[in-house]
Image (tube, rainbow, N blue to C red; front, side, top):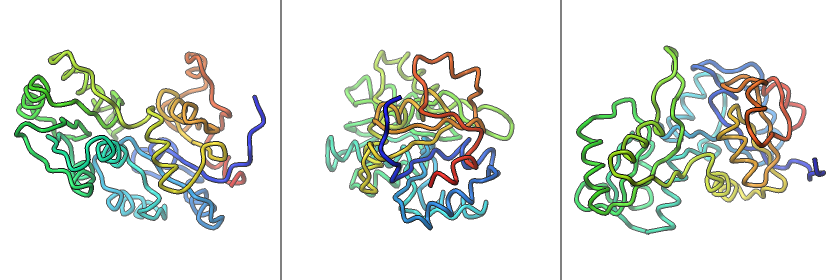
Length: 259
């Protein structure tokens, strides 16, 4: 592979890299501590739009991971940034939780089910048939369809759960209209995140546990990519894809000395 510049900033996925089913992965706390001591810009990213950065900071702190609010970047924040750039001061009908609604409120959006500019689909554990029906009718009526992330399943202690991408497929089937996904693997999420911390892709690295979101997003954003094997991807899975990460490591613990 071509020689890359030294890594000056780090982006890392959360689930499967730093934590797994609510438990910190060995080495995660030390990695975050080393990042903070180094003074290098960094972000913890997640495609999960349920929680606000403040919520996530508190959840991570309870697990012993000290991540400041300003170092957390979610698909909800990326979606809100995209909408603010596209149509400032617009309106949206939202299916989602506080992470999504708070992000839209913060950019001055009005949340409404009356002729909204956008239907925004985010992650929630309580998708209702009534809300999905309303979303379908609003999209058919002219609202643009935006989705936070394409993940079809998400992790839980009981096993995989249907996630935003699966619900988006239902809406697409009913309307004939595909959404614009703002989260990973859209490099938009990476670029807006890099801009938020004043970093450049040529000197940045992305750590993730998924080939189809984390590695692909980092690759398309021009970053060095590290695949860890503590999440959903196994070594045998890698060869199924037409692209490869820059490096494959067992876990985040193997990258502590790279900071």
